[in-house]
Length: 483
Image 1: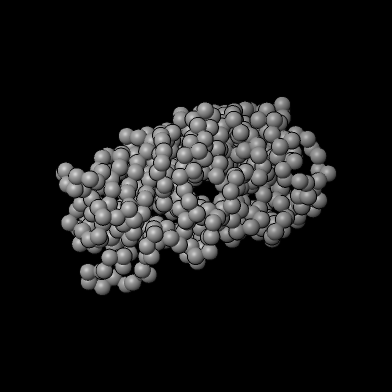
Image 2: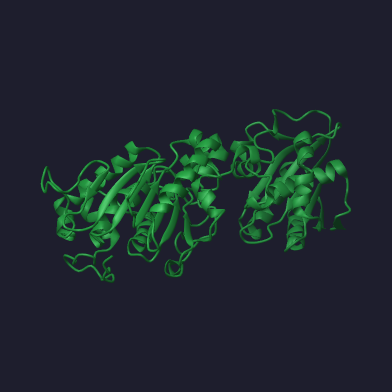
């Protein structure tokens, strides 16, 4: 394969191979608007095109322009950089893969493309007659390069591939939820895709996540990979996979690649925070998979949507309490739950503060909640600054009796062993998914496989409420009355 010249600054009309991917995209698609995250996404794709990355996985929410960049513009750009490259596009159906192929061909025959990459040309009409051009295959005239397209489980017999681009290998949630479809997809990937590759071949897998055991999940569970956080990662990947997950609503810490702060939308001009929050309320499990890139199968959930809702508190309330789990690290949530208990020992959640805001803000929010709910007893975990937090809450809510405690019990054992009791005794207010959307999402998507969960704060706090009110076992706590 020919050597690709190094990148050079664009100055006037660039020489072939010197134009960057974003500038190329705007030249051949003048209607394309590259705003915000698209510029960084295209920068990552350019690194892949120029061979700085051999194996790249990108998961992105639907309707965010992933296929335009990766499966339409990128193959045309790569064939311009290297007309001898053999590229294959694969999707869940041959029809969709052929659609991508035709879009690339339209770019290859455009005058804008010819001005940038004059050496990369394809058959027009019936000439030259000895070259192939169909909706599934097109050859570069005078060179060894070609573009193939194939549907999932389709054949590529006899074809060597220098670069595979796999885009949306599952049609919908029904396909991704089928063990048979997932198994067939993995079999096709290992027996067709991998067998057509050589030492220098590249792979790009880009699609919306549907299931924890989809192709991306299967690869991440079997091969070496790391998340793409810094631009320097592009030059140190080697043979391991680089994984870029772009969340619709930023929930992970800011990185060089994705510097958004918590709660910011990925493409607010097209999908606002309000719209995304509404989608999350409709189905938090599906939202976490498709829009956040954190899939979990429903059968692997600890509680799912099995929480019992109530419309109004009963008359026979015997006590009101609060349990607060302070954030252990900057990425953790503070979870403070107010509740009421009736004569039968049923626990009714009445209010909540669930936030990653700094303590100087959550102290006031928790104190205000205690006053609002007429809470007389509050238990606040002392781990990592909890004592100071408890003192501040006590000053702001003088009528509450505040105690801090140190939790020494094993978190995993506590949550899992009390899971059935939580469902049996805890009641949540009707419409709680609207009142506390993040709390709702993290509890209903919490998984039985402990290490598969990113956040344990909501589950930990709810378990603490049940331990205190049902079992009455304080053996794992060191309690100190705060005055």
